[in-house]
Length: 219
Image (tube, rainbow, N blue to C red):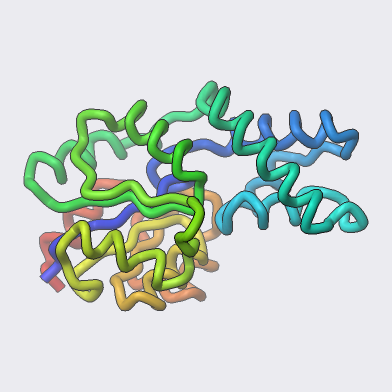
């Protein structure tokens, strides 16, 4: 029986790509580095800011120091102005309201910085009850580590096998597999559905409300 749903944030609940790209390019420009296209940035997101920086800066500029410096700059700027073009995907708010009204436990698990994740969840879904909003912060591993999932499951009070992990990336599908959750890939995010299937997606959904059908099936 499915008892709870864990959602990824970027590319799953929220369309954030343009804002991420704008912030990344602003930081690159301020460091006299070449800018990146939106497709470049799209394929670099998902594994945390440090990995994004390693992907978008010139290879000969990649050092621990430069990655840390630019990552801190991106975090700060994104927190200040990272929601100008962000919006929920069509049907997401309605889905969350339906789950909320039916008392289905929900959480957000993202590799976005914790403060940015909390700020955006509150801004766009402030009326929805989430048991946890878990992001990138010191002392906590990132997805796809199963250790990233454990504190979220504890707050939800459910077993992994009774939990849907809903996301748009291979990272989310691998996270589900590593933690023993049911992997649900979305078609509207930052990755192709073929990649999601290759990494263990048990379901691919075209519209958010299809989550209700999966919950109703009980598995």
